[in-house]
Structure formats: C-alpha cells, structure tokens
Amino acid sequence: MSDNEKNTNEAAGNTNGNAASSGSVPKLKWDDSKMRSSYANVCNVSSTREEVTLLFGTNSTWHTGQKEVSINLSDRIILNPHAAKRLSALLNKVVDEYESRFGPVGD
Image (cartoon, rainbow, N blue to C red; front, side, top):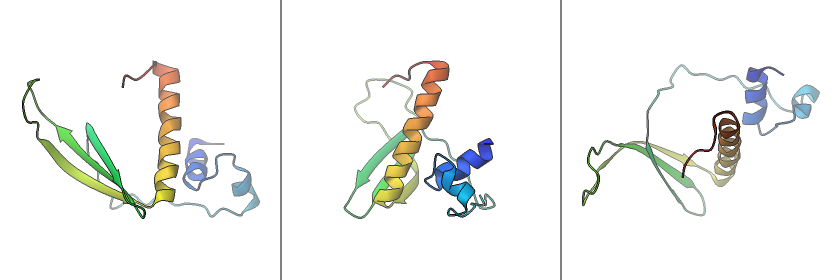
C-alpha cells in the first residue's frame, strides 16, 4: 500500500485497508487549495459535551522566570468528540513512529 493510500485509509478511519478494497469506503480527495500553514509551539485543549477545542499559538518569551508570559494565539480548531478521538489515535501513532526512529520525546 502506498503512503497516499495509507493516509487515505487512516483518515477514513480504516487502518487495515480491507474496507477500501471492498469498495465500502469512499476514496478521499485532499483539496489543499485553501490550506494555510501555521507554526505553533504551544497548544491548549478544552472541551464541552458537544465539542473539543484546540488552541494553537506561539510563546516567544526570551527570558525564563518572568511573572507573566504572553502567548500569541493563531488558530482555533473545533472538533466533535468522534473526530477528536480519531485525531488522538493518529497523533499517538505518529509519535510512536517518531520515537521508534529518533528516540523518546521529552514531556
């Protein structure tokens, strides 16, 4: 299975590829025409019963020990709980693969 097929299956919630080959999972087309890229070194998460909210931003503080640190928030992503759980599984898998190649990531 190619990386593109693998990504399509994972995004559709199918990691074994069986459903895609039987035709029960629609083929995904990734349209990046309106995509933008952002960098974040800070993330905060909050939730309600209906949604999970991810806040991304940057901490550009140069000096440690400051009484107040300002975080410049750049992006807010709001997910339903099902999408949040799928994102959690995908992130765990990516981090596990990263650590197997490059070593443990600190907390």
